[in-house]
View (cartoon, rainbow over the protein chains, first blue to last red):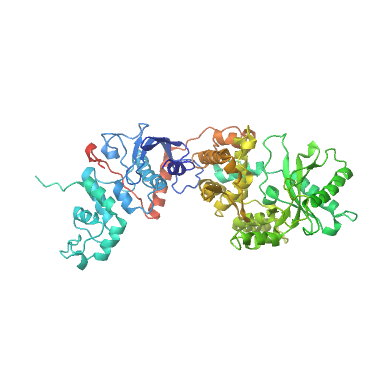
Length: 218
Length: 411
């Protein structure tokens, strides 16, 4: 784990240093906001942020915790920083795992982290979030999971679809999650198989666990 | 190479190319070395030379042939010019010792005829010609015989033929080694080497850029004759020069521990993807070269692309510290060049890289350390928006920010 983190940082983020600590790799230093394609920019980085990242040894199944420690980003939900522990809410983790072709630490840094700080810089200077933003809390998570599941087929009920996907093999006699009322084998059988290949049972279980049961209206 | 007058117009590539140019052997010294090794060749082939019947040829090998020579770290150090003295003969005509001595005899006469003060020195495989201090170089002359047939046979026996070697085998050589038990015996069993095959492979790794640069030079000079390869330098050659200087500087206090040039050059060439830009080439080389270090049954290999039986890292097993030194150097080089290419404006070379390349060298190009100049927020905001545009053009963002309550983080 340490080696893959170090090799992701060395050249592209030379002011970040990684150390192995107990059950995680700790990354500390200055994050340079610059071109994601790695090409040299004559004017240097766009901006800098002091950060710490705790990368669990279970990465990528377990999400890293990223903190902006320079006091530059206000700790408030509208700036996508968790009020409780001050961690940065870079993305809904399982959505990224489900949609990204590459979930290496290097891809995390050049993707979600880069996009997060790019957005923070623009918002700090009076702009809007350039790539949109999720709703807060559970609503945002549901929205992100729904986005992660769509593509192969329409999904009417995210929680039901996740139940199906937690199985080692999609059951043909279950009702299709598209909401047609037909059984899977009569409806989107192939599409569900493709979805199953993209969202493995462990990921579906993780999403299901985080989502929890649907809250009934009072 | 001269940098533009307007400092704000500099690019990273221009600064790095200027630095590599400043590290290169000065053209006058390069030409002087050519004159001298050609004169050795003329001497060996003169009418009353004992070697005339064997059509002796003197050719450069190593960094001089590859175009990756760099200045020594200090003024007191000398350039090390490696030469091959190839005779058209077979191993039936000579033992290793006989060949070595035959070449040595003529070189001693050369030293005497040219009133050279320093005597010829014998090395394990070569003869060493030491010129006067003012020359700033010495020449290592490696006696050799053509031996493609034995080379091919050994590759077949090792199961490595034809592999990726192909035509590179045609220039293989049999060389001498005075530590070997059969040194004085007439035998077919000589050590083999293939420096010209290696050079051909190295050139093939940068063929695209070499062709482009030669065509450009021909156009600029309106020359009708082909431009010699040594008139241009590709980003690969420049990158290897910068990396070697970084290595020399990092191990200045313990040069015997430094990673050897052939390992750096080979891994760099294998990683190179014909980048046009020097900064892009350095990025590719530094972030990928270690992927070409192999593990074969617990033994670390950096295979010679011109000889699959040869492991340039063969000393790493008996001296593991050498591998650690290589890894430490690579990690440091990533950070030091990254600090400039990824982390600084083109006009602000970070202190650490200035130190590695040579403070006086960098200062002579750029002046004294320029303060880190911050671009204004407006222009940085424009750059940020430009970066958003690029991301959107490449398929859109991979993520959207979000925020959760304390208790919503589970798992």
